[in-house]
Image 1: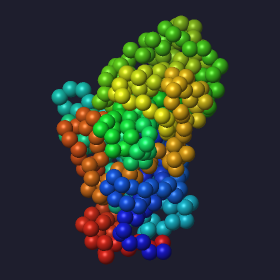
Image 2: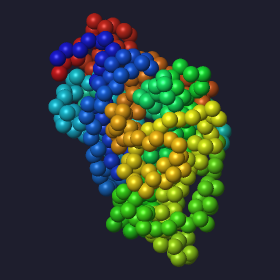
Image 3: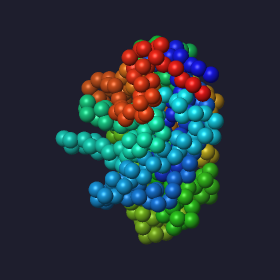
Image 4: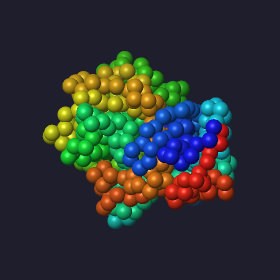
Length: 410
């Protein structure tokens, strides 16, 4: 099959989840241009992250810091793992990489600091390695330009959510239950209300780190919330956690996984030992925290006139039955649905985000929302690492509008 440049292309998105369980990759077929995109997820893979790589990324992203050699090694090894995931995705989808236009890499955010005079950000996962191993042009480092223009570098998903889920006849809410939780406000399309978004608090980063500490590594996650459902929530601890500035601060706000990850979990486990709290009680309380942070932020920060009919949920947390139930109780007037019902697999939403951000770069459209990140204005986001000469020529043909030069062969 040959496709011309009439708004149709194949894009791959790849990213490492903040909880470091997997490397996710998706293959999209995209029709249209700019913000008028029709997106079909053709195939997706979730590759378990190698234990050595996961432990290295935990070290380099923790509050204790790491030396430059470890950071450089993590950057290279994660790029290699991304390249393997991209190739495995294409193989399992029976698609030639020559038919793919580019890769959007979400990378892994090892550091995000928005306080002080000089905000800093570090994204790992070498795009040069991905390009070399796959022959595909790579778009990466989406947050860097937003932060350079006065923004927080995150969240960048709100505009993607608007492209994927906003409709004319209904107000909607999206809730991402990933390593960190995120909320996007989607008023009806063409209304006067703006699209808004913020990171609400901890998600699977907290739940996973806590269960790993409490079980001394025997469990990687609280699958389905089965530990949490056996406990009781601890009001004293929940009230204390709800005062965390990462939860109480107003948007725009962006969080880093280290706020609620391994060090936080170890400190919590030590406090529990002093207080005589059980592992089940801690997991129950942590799950309540995730739900409260999301629901409270929706109630506090949504515009008064915003009345969503449904909430679309994404991220690995959609499989946590207790978390889902707590959210429904807190936001009882909203209908809850997984994004799968709208053609977007919930588990790989972050990889979809990376692919859509790559599309926007190629279409030369701004991809950040000032209301969400605090940037001084919209910006074209991403850095380019050219692939093979043939692939880069195709990307240039798209960028320059030379439609007769763009042909992709299966």
